[in-house]
Length: 245
Image (cartoon, rainbow, N blue to C red):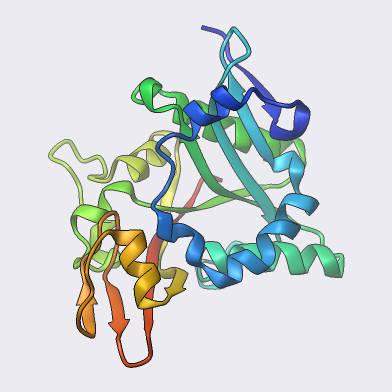
């Protein structure tokens, strides 16, 4: 099948097509990053050309992906601390007139019924190609390792190095990036910080949180830390920085 790529703002997509594409989505708590809320509107305003759709032969969106440009000197120690910090760097750099030289691929999603057919790789490739056409010599991604939720107590520094018997990455999303030639650069143990009240976290997780302490939560890549006295729960999500070129 021949696939094409369009900007997400190129047209008004039928609601039923978007509902299918985003039907699995992300955990509810993913929106509880307060700093992301402050910057995401400007990301969408400043960088619409990096928000893409992959279309099948009938013009139906089967995958989506997005990114943003930042300035980075190529050293692992100079990377943003994670996804949220990359948003801040992209927005504030744009506002200061800083010339970007690096595309940060922030995410990609595939229609659930079409997973396992290589569409995620096609979406990532489309984003990389867009960065190349824009003259950005480097491409990196703060990868959210999808299977890490099975091992929330394992440090991300260890998990990201786990391998299967065939030598490929244990995590399927890390593995997808590696198949496209990407390499692991560094762990991002605090890529995002999600904050909410105890009641909010009980709603997001479906768990009772009766005492202060650490909790393993559904779809969490690390533990949720609850302070009942302060009525707050804090979850720090780890990512893995990977470099495509």
